[in-house]
Image (cartoon, rainbow, N blue to C red; front, side, top):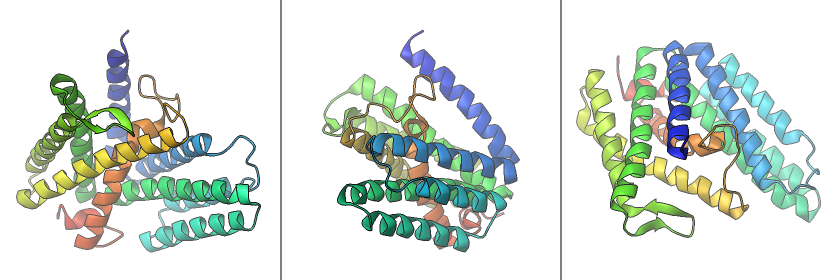
Length: 276
C-alpha cells in the first residue's frame, strides 16, 4: 500500500469519527476536544523536552488535567481563558525558580500548555450546542480540509518556488495559492448549502482561515525542525502524530473563535457568524 493510499484511508476514518461526534455536539464533542488537547500536549512534550528534564515533575500534566476537567464540565469561556493564563504563568514561574536548564524547558512546557488548551477550547466553544455552532465547525472543516487537499495536489502538479524551504522544503508557493483558492471555494459552498446570507463576509473569513491554517502547518514544521523531529508522533498511519494532522485545523479554529468572539460573545462565537 502506498503512502498516499494510507493517508487517504486514515483521513477518511478520522473524518467519519470526527464528523459523527461533531453532529452529536455537547459532551461527546467536548470529550473529543479534551482528548485532542491531551494528545497534542503529550506529543509536544515528547518533542520538546530533553530526556533528562524532570525539574517540573508532573506539574504541567496536572495543570492540563485541571483544564480538561473544566472544559468537559462546560465552564464559561471567561473561566477557561483565565485558567489557561494561570496555567502558563504558574509553569513559567516555577521553571524560573529552578536551575537554568529547567527555565528553557519550562518555557516550552508553558507554550505547549497554551497551544493544547487553546486548541481544545476554541473548537469546543465554536461548536457549542446549537445549530450555528454545528455550521461553524463544518465551515471550519470544509475550509481547512480543502486547503490541505488542494495545496497537496496543486503543489505536486504545478511545483515551482518553495514556500518556506528552511522550515518545510516540500511546500510550494503554487500549493499555498491553490490551497487558499480551494479553501475559499469549499467554505462558500458549505455556507451556501447551510443557507447563510453573508457570503461575501464569509468568503473573506474563509480566506483568512485558509491562510492561518497554512501558517499553523508551518509553525508545527518549525517546532519539529527546531527539535530535529520528522513527525510529532506515530499514532495516525500515513500522517504521523495528532499534531501533524490538526496543526492547521487548531490554528484556524482559534482564528475563527476570535472572529466569532468579536462578532458575538466569547461563549457563543458561532452566533455572530451564522445567526440562527
